[in-house]
Image: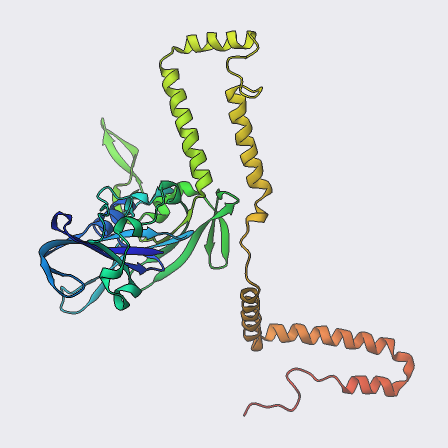
Length: 415
């Protein structure tokens, strides 16, 4: 992915930008409670007062207060966002690293268009040669006056349909800054994105996971819990009676939270189709609100009696057509799930297989259970062979017997 470091002189008098390549997007989560707020802070600029601006010949153009800000540019098919949940404090004179367990919510669907340099509300519109934009390589090797790109041309001419993403995975950390445990929640993918089925990968433990537990398992923050109640005896009206006292309510910090979230790009065709359906549903809802429910029922009955000529679309009513589209979409997801699996490169499969073989060898080198099993297996095979060769005479049997080496081998002593 690429981001852009923009410099905008006061009043838009001068503009410059440099593109930088990122492998993941890192966001600070201290002081914010949602991913949207963290992205807004990422894109919020800071003012450098009285910044010196010069041309390509180092001639002074003036001193202007300059807004230094970041914007997104190109986003990958799989976007990794690192949530900085660690901070260093110097209150004791020595660096102390603490983990930030505060609440930070992230959505299942998000559109990043408003955080791009062409989609943000305060985007700078190119005005020609005075708006210089350069890449990292061009900044080092080219004269800015020879770069023809304006900030508009530098920004990708992509619309919101190219920046729609859905949540497909989280890496979870439970514990503190100096210790803890890592595991993952991952959503299965289908031909058009997530299938809605989530799995928990926790070392050797793999099971399904309910995404309705997103807040409790992934967002962090505080949670309330109730302490244990107890029975007691109290005096009421001169009699002693037993009463149950409910436990007190307490608040505690959730030390389990996500520190990396993964979003997959939603195909543009799917996004456009969903937007079209929303517009149609919205138009239908407005039309329905203008009519009473009784009138709608009467109109439906009249249409049915008339053969449905006024509401049929391609021989189907709108409801039937919509139901057919839903059934077709679900059938496509279930039947094409295996076809949507990512192709793993052969060299990567070979490397994983080699690592697995090495792991099992090292694990079994000093494992007596393994050698006991192999001893029994080989011994059983040799005894079966001896039985088959019994008619060959005692010499053959003696030779077979002498070839058996016990484990541990006889005569080997600890030094």
